[in-house]
Length: 176
Ligand SMILES: Cc1cc2nc3c(=O)[nH]c(=O)nc-3n(C[C@H](O)[C@H](O)[C@H](O)COP(=O)(O)O)c2cc1C
Image (cartoon, rainbow, N blue to C red; front, side, top):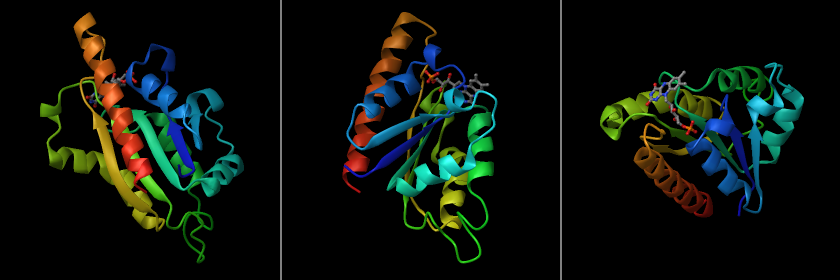
């Protein structure tokens, strides 16, 4: 399996169903590292050098998060803004992440009906745009809907959807 780096943002992973299951399952695999940004940086002071070194070692980078107002959680935005610097990720002829593969992997609370293709394309665009700008290869997004614990039945369905999400990610990782 290719070296896979999972950048996880979730402000309360202990209450999570989807992102917790997905990252715990992937963490069991060889050559996969999960970095929980909220645990690493509770004060939001990102260690830029350390993050850049981890990125350099990865072949596949997965942005893993619950969708918050059609966007990534705040700490992931902070991480992106600090880590993808001029002279490292782009510019001065330095594209140190060139050709690395990128996947956006997120969960939504509401139904697939709220997420037609044009909406998913818009939501994914900031990560796709980042990848393109840094000469990385955006592979795809993997999205699971209705991840919530509104009832016991909803919780069961969420767990099932999270399992499918993991399987999709593993297939994509293995085929690259
Ligand atoms: C601040 C906030 C904003 C949210 N915004 C959205 C949203 O825009 N669309 C949506 O479908 N769900 C939204 N949700 C629901 C989360 O996406 C959902 O709880 C999460 O994907 C479930 O994953 P988890 O089990 O890992 O916590 C939001 C939740 C919070 C706390």
